[in-house]
Length: 333
Image (cartoon, rainbow, N blue to C red):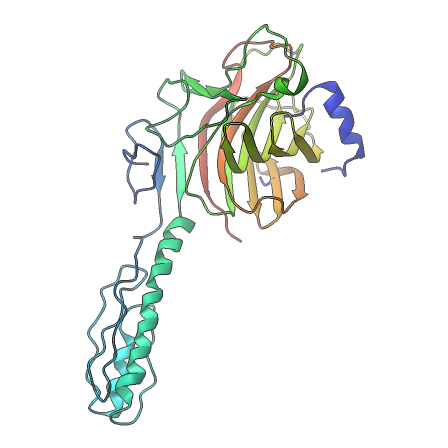
């Protein structure tokens, strides 16, 4: 979001150059494989499993029943422990290998090791880890919602709107802004993603008034409240003159530059701007080529999103620089 000349001068002290589907969920909640009637859709890998009831291994040869497997497999009934082989009952559930076959009588208790099948509850984490969202912004709305999938709670910033398949900002046109409030970027973000995440947007570049700057932004680990918005902004200027990684610290206008680069040859229609964060490593890319990278561990959670900003003079027109497609997913370590 640093886009006036004074903000760009700050970059001189930085090290030179982020790699850069919801059913009818009213609150944007995740569903498995559902599709959103409003255009965007969340998907998640596999069925979320709670692990089922903890199995009980009977003493002295009682039957052992393993918990539900994380992958949704059906728990199997263990055999009784009237012999050394009874310990094989612990093999119930896809995630449990069970106890080692023991001697008669005591083997049944070792079969109770099948209770590790209860770790199937981690399947819920696996589902979260596999979440993704994609949209073509094909519903005109302001603010961007798509049946509640998108969120924006900050009162000191502007909202994202969609029109004619383009998501862009709603900052006032032709109205000068000054002080911290000039950085009232338009943004929206999703929910339910793991900390390691990646996102990308397909650029729309219309007729641009170059008397002020314009940005598209990929947001990472984003969260907000009425007067606080924090996370990582990975932006690219309309002309490729800069590509920045900026940390938002909370209050409007409170930000920290982490690194900056540029895009030789500028930005064009249908270019792909992408960003990712894994651990404390952030990358910003254009068409698969890394343009800036940074290391920061300030925020350990949050969600991906989109943002847009136009210069403090408010030049240009709504929809002149935005995204026509967006996707987000968990990022591999």
